[in-house]
Figure 1 (cartoon, rainbow, N blue to C red):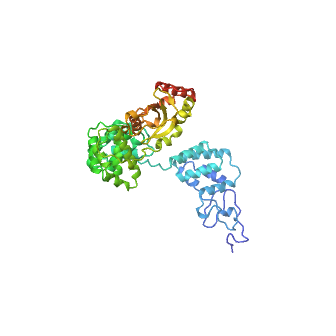
Figure 2: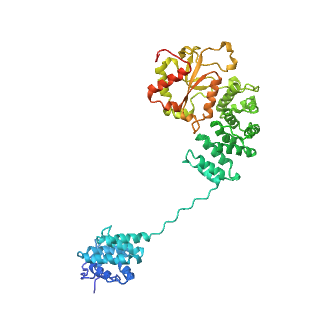
Figure 3: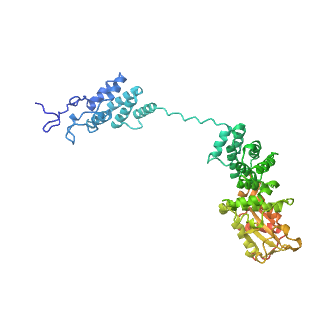
Length: 504
């Protein structure tokens, strides 16, 4: 009785030349040299060649039992593919003749255009196992065919077609949107239909212009026109955002109904949103366009008592203090209510946020050193806040004959309010304020001061301080401290000032 294969004492059949044995139910596979001869004999039929290349793996009966004592293929049973079979076949034979390899290479190159993708992969493995170079004609032909059979990449989805208002909103909402896209914004705005320009889109546009200091008249006029046309549908919380860039960018629109429209909105909404009301008036204060009726309302005891108990009471009082200063200095004809003295607070008790954020780019330190070497430390004050709360960069006290005086021996402040001080009792000494005009104090075009800066300089001048601007273009052109000292000397002497030996 024949013993089952794999039992102790059984012997694996000895392989014969040109063939390998197969167990029950297993396929026969040719030995390597024989396999190559079979492949070469299939030159007339590419279909038959493809089928021969997909030979099943060699069966374990010719290789002997594995370490588990059975005859399962090391590569994994019935699912082992033709590549494993080819590999095991090619591990056994003597070296294959070079002429045979060349014939096989030419055969596969001629027929591979008709192979399917699986056959192509088998040929690639076969070529690698037989040692064909990766940059040789066989491997290149197979790789080319493999790439041809790759599924095509799906085309990228088409971007949605955006109309003018949608395109404007999408651009303004993008955090990586460039800072100077005026032409893109103008084109999108021009292509938008009126119904596409929603309050949300126009608020985004207004915030973008204000944030990046873009003083673009065409865009600002579009916002002003939108505000006038949509007056009935806008509340003061939206209007404060639409009006913000006009004050910040120091731009009075040409739209004739702009101011009458805002006065009507303030009259309608002042009691509804106190902070929004004050924010609108702050923007109008920078434009020197304060409406008397709204001032009457915000300075009334009822409005002040109402905001005193709100979370934003301090900021509202600070804004009301600035509005009261504007009334004092710029509106001599105003006869209405004023902010009570006990409610007034310093306007800007600290340097502005932009100055603090960009202090490392400022010229203040080098100008301070130049003044110290030129005048001496006792003849100027730096970062002094003068009533009613305006910060100064550098302040000098100057006698009536133009001599720079020690500041600590003088009262550096001029009286405020100036109308309450009789002219005969005023200090004859002048106060000269050196004002740094840094690059970020201007709109993006570099020619128009931002509204807050222009307001500060305007009010300091109205209080009696003599201003000496130091523009950033001139400061940036000075090369080193010696040139800066010479520049400051010329500036001070142009005002008729003189002092003792340099450095005191």
